[in-house]
Length: 148
Image (cartoon, rainbow, N blue to C red):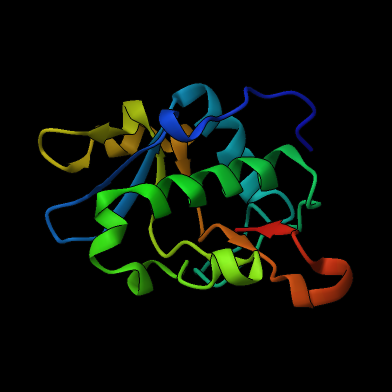
């Protein structure tokens, strides 16, 4: 579990798309590394396949706070203004929960000019696996928890 990690501000997040129109939230590497580790918590490292969910991170945890900041940056971006429904965050402001159907990556893993991954094989540590999610307010005790 993450005990200390840098705080993320909305202005630290660059929201962009790749050349296929998929959304990316590009964040500083110092934030991406611990967030990538949080996304893998609770997942068996020997598991094969794609349908795995991380351990839930409490609503007041660093991971949940960081994901909320990413959500706010995505919602404030011109990229999201084009089609907010495609990003899974259309109900975030109303129900305080949702899922970002895009990618979160550290700056060293993203080539801004090419709008594509940079050195994909060697930047695993800054790629956040899964889809960042915050449980809706209606989920009772799980409300606000974060999973990937």
